[in-house]
Amino acid sequence: MVRPPAPPALPEELASVLRRMRLPYVRAAAPEVLATAKAQRWDPAEVLRVLLTEEVKGRDAATQRMRRKAAGFPTGKTFDSWREHDSSIEPATQSALRTLEWIGRAENLAISGPSGTGKSHFVEALAHAAIDTDLRVAWFTLESLTATIGRARVDASIAKVVARICRSDLIVIDDIGSLPAGQDAAEAFYRVVDAAYERRSVAVTSNIKPSGFDTIMPKTLATTTVDRLLHHAHQVLTDGRSQRLAEALAGKGVVPLT
Image (cartoon, rainbow, N blue to C red; front, side, top):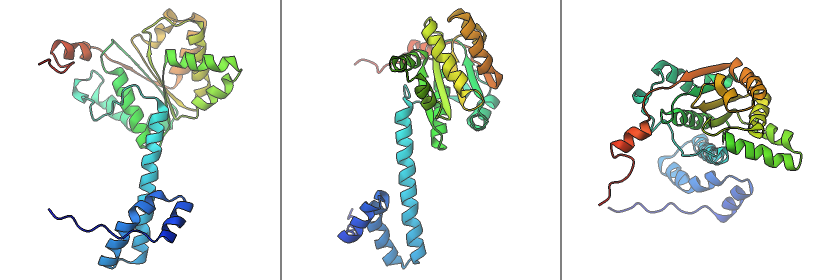
């Protein structure tokens, strides 16, 4: 197969101007676009439209990559690997949550159920979808949130750190209840939920219902936090056997040894 000749490089003066104007995606696309435009006699306005569209697409993709990295996702699971019909979450509920309209209304999401029933996968997929629609996401476990707030306590910057977290449109606190939560964890959880209340969406996953959080953390803080968390919240319950355990027992958890 004979490859077509490469389009001529941009004149250095033009490339320099594009670098100075910080238009890297225009600079990358311009040689091929200009060659095509010349061969097909494009209208100048069409050339400009195509080049600027490439810049916008490139910048959007770069922003999404940056936001995924900043979010701190645990595994990178998206709806591409989500098995809707294997989930115990009602299909209508899944569809409604996937619209992400609840994030625009600063509503919360609380998903609780046994381990391995898809809670974290579903919420992480929602979070990736949120980034795809130009929203910001912050992902924590209760342990990592406690550590983040704890470091801020050292230099008295807790308010600044909480404000930074709440710049995200969706704040996820994953896997609450797997470990006991002491005073520091309960305080960190409360600070974020209180600061986000009616301003940002908070999504939590847990193996116990939010009404039972007072069994794993100090009752007074748990009650106050859950009151704010559930005021504008969608509560979803999962059930069934662990999907992870089922895959392991079926020999699908690892590549077979040879």
